[in-house]
Length: 83
Image (cartoon, rainbow, N blue to C red):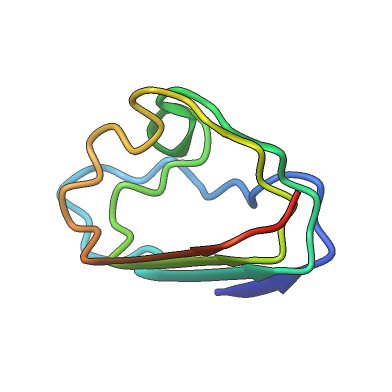
């Protein structure tokens, strides 16, 4: 999934954990996502199947503890964010 011009990360449908379908790659660029909240990728955005995540020029200022909670499949994380 490739997105730009966002104020928040996209929300995915809540799929059962046994489902292999889902977004495995997320690229977000030129957006205004200031904070990665605790467990939000897991609880609200349902992105535990991600294997690659890239945030480029997203004005990131804060990454809270446990922001990447239960992201055991995440193998590649690239943050190129400017405040």
